[in-house]
Image 1 (tube, rainbow, N blue to C red):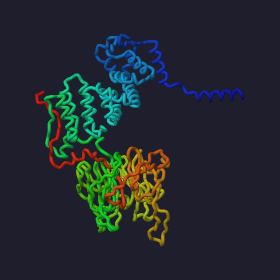
Image 2: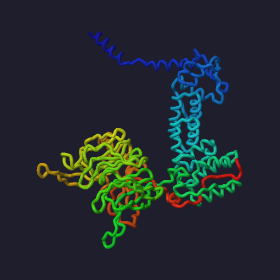
Image 3: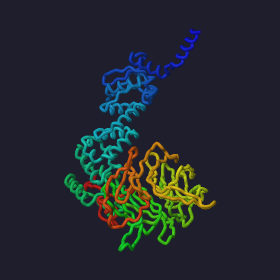
Image 4: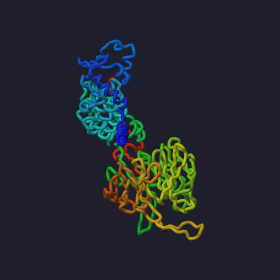
Length: 613
């Protein structure tokens, strides 16, 4: 009996030992063949050093070798393949990777290995080295990495290097590696809209720095590269600097001029670079333009912007008085929809403010007047959702195509709702909480409505609590819901009557996953101060809440809100109430006079030569 038990135990232990995989034996076998140089049928040669190899293996992972060994090239019948301009050490490392799967990478050798892997079309090796270069990018390596990725058209690495260079263009343009770039690489870099430069003069100086270091004919080079320099965006003082350079360095060359107004400058230049904008938190609110003895003389809907870079208040031209409007931004444009007049009438108007021109324009009106509605942007469309029209709560929804400049109806909401928080996430629209008069539970809507813009379909997700007039901010693959109102208690006076609730402001915040469920994995601290409704935006991966003349900010992972700065109040208007806030991109002050110039003026557009080339 004991013998049987021991035998059974041995059998159980044997089943726990898993056999080595076929891949393991293949790798070990290839390593042995490589080290012993057995069964080799071709020799790779680099700088006189010989590496015996196996045609079948080389052809199995490289289209380059497959074509070489299967088509009627010289290498098809010859026993040696000679690689010019390839280091023996680089070829050795490539073969070690091919035969063993092992690779030792250093910053000193990575770029040469990448070039060789690209030449030999060894895609998995290219991917590994590309990730290594991307992870180790720095001020000293970024230009070389960009040139490498650009030369080999390797998109993944090119995106990383391009992003790094656009953020650090000014210091990189005077880096010792910059003159070593070739003409097409420099041309590619300075053509980017994403350069973080506040003035086009920075790009011009970079071009001059590169041209002066080249042995070739400088005028030909400057003429080629100035096609990418947006001369119409230069101020008069900056143009004078360029003109002096041209006269001093190129003699018979001169600037070419055209008569352009602000719109013409923008069109001719191709648009502003990213660094030529400031980011503003723009608050839509009701402001008293003039108050004497406590009596309001004029009440308008004003737009106050807080310039986050300059830490200063700025103003946007006001609109007529509108209460409970929809409010959003798309890049450098503000949109205001609907709202209620002082006489109680509800409007369906749509207004657009262009920060480039500094002007408001009225666009086609909604089909239904709305207030307290959702107003969101997604994929070049604006969406007006639910809300109220007079005493009626709405379930209708419509979209405005920014390209076609027209409204179209979309699928109605599952029920009428207003006063909800709203946000856009991954081509879906989220309506969070709010008031509804059509639900059996009374006024409160305990749920999330999610609209799929591609399917024109609504979905409902339950919410365990009520919230009204909160602010929703999209970040980190989810939605942060900030503050607002909640019901503390409620009671039903008689059967069939609505619920009467005690509604109060809340400091609490919560996080919604993309499926509309509340996530307990993301902890958001309570707001340090009660503000209704919160004026909150996301900027530089932080949520910023504007409270009077103070900004509080919070970043995911932090345990509390930080009072980041005290803002000098704007004294020109009296702030009565803020109903929302958005992030708007506004041209820097130095550029605004150029872009908003109504009459045409002589504008430098290029460099020309009196001689013919």
